[in-house]
Image (cartoon, rainbow, N blue to C red):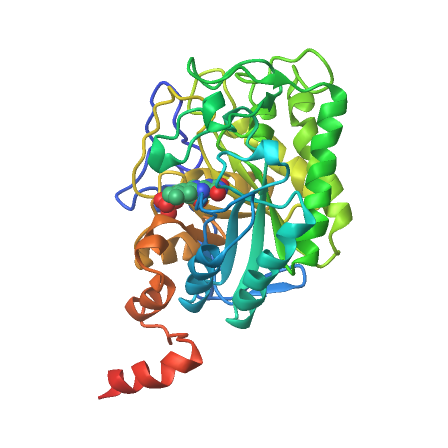
Length: 395
Ligand SMILES: Cc1cc2nc3c(=O)[nH]c(=O)nc-3n(C[C@H](O)[C@H](O)[C@H](O)COP(=O)(O)O)c2cc1C
């Protein structure tokens, strides 16, 4: 297979991914000769943890919490996808401080009261044979917004708006509040909040942690020169812009057990000239690997409202493939991956090590089992269903 297109990622001017008629899979792949025995339903071992397959539930905010506390909605939402066969269930962006919530409905982990409701979910997910992870997040300048189904706009003071923070005093758009630029003490408080959140996540029984450094939220906004115009140690050079994320990763790695995996979700490009891009993402991924990060979860965009993103089937897959190849680290592919055969090819052709499914799992909680059926694999129905539905199939 030709790997010619692997590094042929779009210039921002092109705004379009070069891809073959398999929508990026062929163009993105390298290792099909090396790992022909692996497919979507092969287990994935990272450190001491083994995922039963390579389908993960992508973190998806439900905006349904009160004061950050998980409730029955989160229990059923996450639990049903574990029943549905996903190998990894990733709890949505969970705010490490109340100020770091996108909306008043976000999950939180800034208080000990958050632990037990999350622990209940973690216990159930694990009982179903899935691995349970949590995405730790701080929304930065995109915090203090209304619920998406109420318009998603910045909250007004009457609606309970709160102060937002960022690397620099630059709002997300002209209607957004101008955030306060964090001073060094504020930055240290953010790092400490990620560490304390990690300790609570361990108490709740989570088996892996993902740091949310994508989609324009606080950690991503430090990476990108478009949102970070600081002149101190945390701005300017690439090294300085990466400093906060690298420090958060280093401190979390030092907090969790040696055998526990650590993922980082990044936006591999801002899709804007002069912004964060794939070359910087490769350098960042190498640095994260040195610090003991195990997997880069490769998304894109979200930093600025005017980016033109060529959204199409698997449009982010080539970024995952390039980081995997050039930083020699596990990657996860995500974004408009909806078909079993296509998801399988992402693994069999070595574009990524894990496939994250978002909205398609909202449409169909049993997507992994249905994918097994369509790929002629043995299905992993839960015991209480399997004896009944498999018997019907034999008739
Ligand atoms: C309702 C909803 C909530 C989301 N919340 C998060 C989140 O909490 N953290 C995150 O990193 N991405 C979040 N995303 C992005 C998804 O994880 C995923 O990357 C994106 O939807 C593309 O995958 P898909 O095409 O399979 O849905 C969210 C997406 C949706 C649709």
